[in-house]
Image (cartoon, rainbow, N blue to C red):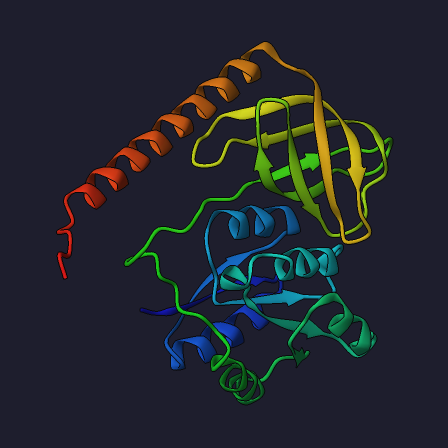
Length: 243
C-alpha cells in the first residue's frame, strides 16, 4: 500500500522540487492549483499528505477543513511559506510541518521523512472509504463558503465548516455522494456551534434536485436493508455451541 500526497501549488519550480523529493521517497502525488479543486479532491478520496502553498488565497481555510476530517482520513499537512508568512498562523490553521520557500530538495526530503511516520497509506486497493461531499453556501455578497457534509436526509443536512456559520436562509449546492447529480436550492441554518458544525433545513429545492435526492436516499436505504439481511443470514448459519 503506497503513500500519496495532494499538492496545492501554482509555482512550477516548487512543484518540480516537491515531485523530485516525493519520487525519491516513493510517494505518489497529485497537483491542483485552487482551493475549490483541492476541497473536491479531499472530499472524494484519501491522501496521506497535503502540501499547501500559504501564499494562495484561503489556503488556511483548506487546511482547517482537512484537519476536521475523521482521524482515519486526516492527512499530514505541510505548509509552504514565504519570508512574510506568519509561521504561528500556519500552525494555528492545522499545519504539521513547514516548508520554506524557495524550496530545496534536501529540505523537503528532511521534512517528508520526519512526517512519513505519521502518514497513513492509501488503502484504495484493499478497502472502500465512505465517500464524502462538499456543500457550497452563499451568505449575502460573500464568496461561496465550502463545508463538509456530515449527514444528509430528505429534510436537510448537517455540515462541518472551517468557521462558525451565521443563522438564516442560505442558497446551497452540492453533489450527491458517489454520483454526478447536482442538488441546488435554498436552506436555513437552524443551529450552529463555535466549532463550525451546523444543521441546515431545506426550504426549497429545484424539482429535479428533489427527485434526485429522493432516489439517492431510497437506493441507500435499500442497500442498508440488504446488508442487514445478509448479516442476519450469516449469523443464523453459525454453529451453536453445546458445551
